[in-house]
Length: 144
Image (cartoon, rainbow, N blue to C red; front, side, top):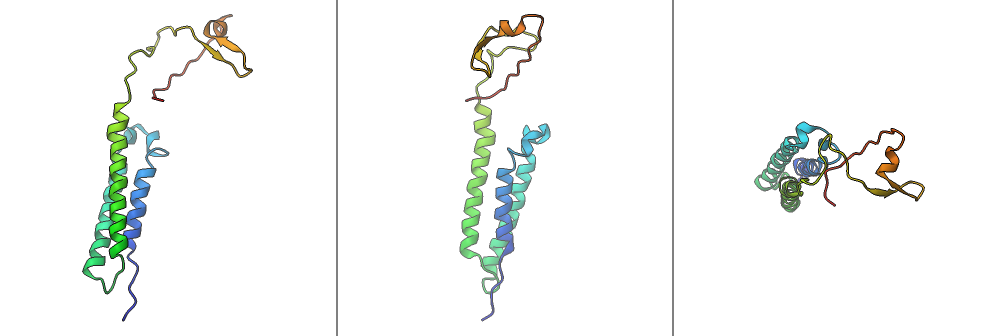
């Protein structure tokens, strides 16, 4: 009996699926071309699917030569689950963030507010604007 070889497309395919899912937020969100529609991540998922399909074919078509019948099915199911969760998060959850109809528009005067400063004392917007000082307010679109 000959020793069966490792079925590397299964392992590389699963690693590529993980890379596709976990590279979106730290890397691809930085660029508008990949943030608005995650085409690069979808291409990575496609490559992962092709590698997994090749690995599964090798495992089942040539079982005397390659390993991976059980691990290949497990990697395939896990990769499919990761892809499903990625699509759910990017295409459904991210699109259902509430709209910002009440947020101030560009050029509109900001409403008066009071916040706690770094020293622990309360600071109002009008206090910050005294003496012709400029105040830069940054509004992040988000939902917490």
